[in-house]
Image: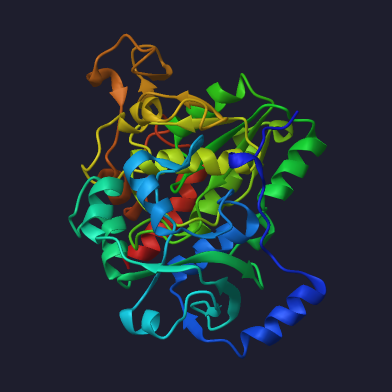
Length: 385
């Protein structure tokens, strides 16, 4: 039996048929706002049920509940507010109780908002409670501060899904659930990544796969930091790794078109509930999940799940410590399983790895598979020129 969606209902706000035709005609006559790429991805997530049970953008009461209590409503965990920001001027031109057309960053009509509320919440308060910092150096805080000061709330009807690179791998929650059923998988573990998969990640996924029927490699492909490795490069890495080191019958690749907020522990909860919506029964939470810089403790993303209201998440969580190749045991291991000291562990900093790649050097095979290294070398040497 499949796992129920978060909040009990898998949302679908994408219009079809005559309803879609009527909405497109109506949108052309409505007051219109244009949103950023970031907000356009959030609209897509609401439309496809990735953000179930959300059917639109949050009200002030929901926002308060999320930032103060980590609940969308009693029994339903939620940790990051999903907001529709506009300028004061744009907000003044809109009337509560009416409909508003939304254009995305590409200039397309993508949704109609049934405007129920206009409100503001101090952005520094949001930053402190969600990101644990008010520093603009934090990429998630920087995005928050760059947005308009007024938030619009209300349900949305969506006119079109957002197409992205690697669209063939952009399965909706309904589609992944159907695929799992066709494969006969009952226990599915999801692996969240915004980086290439190195040996340590491979170790985590294979440990998890020992207790599950299938592994969903599920890279985040919404907006990310400018210095993150591009999606095209990462996809090549996932594909060569799957071709050479995973059993075809027990692994699949699909992308997750969700913005990266770098919110550490709060985002780990979001990544878990989103995978529940995709039909996964298990979720890997690793070291410094969704972290950036030194804003979060190494295992804060593990501890936060103990703070959630009991039963507010249905997905099973698999917590992993820092993993590495151990020269002492001559195997992949973690701080839970390896008796050696740090000197026995093969660990390379991201800076050192990038320098090696730019020189055309493969990092040690204990750190990354050679096929993955070759993809990264091709990219890094071009970047260095």
